[in-house]
Image 1 (cartoon, helix red, strand yellow):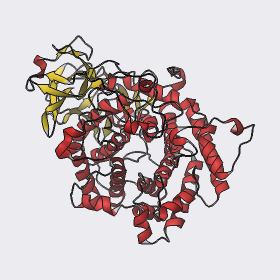
Image 2 (cartoon, one colour; image 1 turned 120 degrees about the vertical axis):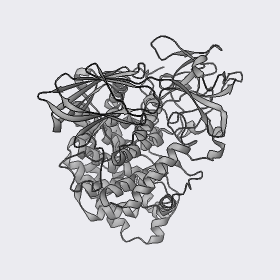
Image 3 (cartoon, helix red, strand yellow; image 1 turned 180 degrees about the vertical axis):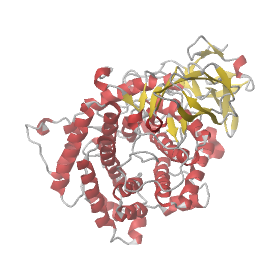
Image 4 (spheres, helix red, strand yellow; image 1 turned 120 degrees about the horizontal axis):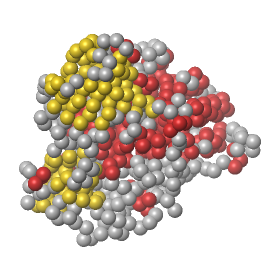
Amino acid sequence: MRRKVTIIGWALLGSVVSLTAQSVYPGQHAGKLKLETVVPVKVKSFDVKDVRLLPSRFRENLERDSAWMASIEVNRLLHSFRTNAGVYAGREGGYMTVRKLGGWESLDCELRGHTTGHLLSAYGLMYAATGSEIFKLKGDSLVKGLSEVQQALGGGYLSAFPEELIRRNLQGKSVWAPWYTLHKLFSGLIDQFLYADNRLALEVVTKMGDWAYGLLHPQTEETRRKMIRNEFGGINESFYNLYAITGEERYRWLAEYFYHNDVIDPLKEQRDDLGTKHTNTFIPKVIAEARRYELTREEDSRRLTDFFWHTMVEHHTFAPGCSSQKEHFFDTARFSNFVNGYTGETCCTYNMLKLSRHLFAWTGDARVMDYYERALYNHILGQQDPESGMVCYFLPLLGGAHKVYSTPDQSFWCCVGSGFESHAKYGEAIYGYDTESLFVNLFIPSVVNWKEKGLTVRQETAFPAEERTCLTLHTSQPVQATIRLRYPSWSDRAVVKVNGRRVAVGKKGSYMAITRTWQEGDRIEADFPMQLTVEATPDNPRKAALLYGPVVLAGERGTEGMEAPAPFSNPRLYNDYYTYDYHVPAGLRTSLRLDVRHPEQTVKREGQALRFTTPQGDVLRPLYDIHRQRYVVYWDLTE
């Protein structure tokens, strides 16, 4: 039976505020950080309360996400923690009748507890976004329950699994990523403090930090190197953030303790030594280096971050902005060989967007936002099934594959956890600012309140279904400022008007600056013509994806051979998705006759919707809109 999603009423949600998760960016959290960014910053981030989403597909995804988050009982999230500590809530508290979570949160999974960390972040963010008390109460209840578990365990340690897993890790024995799971708890508690002002969360997380320092400080270098061979997520980023909040040097020591020489040293030397390593193990370590640069001026960390980002985007990224196959890097000289059913782990894209925001803060480079836009629309927006609200682990690019979704309480993969956050923070990069300028980075319906200037900007658009966005400025008195509007690299012949009069647009792939004294009701209208383009794999010009502007188009291929309920629920074991058989029909066509230089002569748009057809009878729509059926993204081109 298909699950029917009940959406929380908009009266309850109130105004939607854009979000920023699990990282600290320049310009945010005034008054809560003892150590601010010490490096030059070109673009700062708005606080979450300053940006509100208007009706759009983005807000619809957020609503579905909020409904799922609200439906998960706190006692279920605390169950494995209480079991580990022997803390029982009793029958009155519901513990004796609690329904146990499944998948990666089951009691026999060594990764149990990671989802609670993700939801600590997501509840705090959603509360900051909506003002809805349900998310504040859930976050407070989780933190209170975790505090009780921490007290029962003693010594500051806090987890859903026994400390024995940490000892096994220190000994170099087999164990499934205990520090990765602790990273989610550290980040979630930090986010509860930053976004929900939960002081108990800060108390709990600093005790966890003190426990970690006491455990790791006496260890030998040999033990350290042995330990960090195991995946540890971005826990060093969390320690840098805890260092920024408290100013305590021991947390900086912990962050540097998790410096992974084998991974970071080659990047310092500008070497693409990625091989077939685990992709999402790499990216969080580079995010930590980005935070290290911002807090310490360590130039090596900036250079390696820049090198890694460009290496990823230019050599290891598929057309939708995603990366990895079966979670790993691959031989890019044989790129087209890896267009399969296990591409695009969603956590990789989640983390690449986080990394991109740091790089953009330092550079203000429009090309960073070009990538951000590509990955946001084609992967993150399309991860969520509009019918059920469930999410995907991979974005399969095999011709004839289909998306495979999670379940409400029996999956809890890593990409479910990051998905709780991703679909709550769409507005995080729409705007930025410096002393005199407002940066308009993305064309998403929203309102930004630039308090320092006394200026509110309302953006209204149906992008990407239309090529236009309109900005209306509101101010109680005239304001001298610059509006910097991104001229995306996928457009040509842009037209920008201020109050009906055309202004200079500059060159694409940059920001066009409009400086003037703004009055109440001033209006900016920008048209960015969109074209069909063909993007081939680097090694095979006949294997290619079609894009309309930044939007990847996918060919509809129906539901033949899709055995219910597989495409509508999920594989039932921990990692069935990893070898999932899509049963692609033998006769399914993946070829497309196309003039590569003039695709518009073959592929025709129908009406106002983003629906395209070909003489071969293909129907193409945005990949983010293709759900519950097979599709083709990379075509075998014929003239």
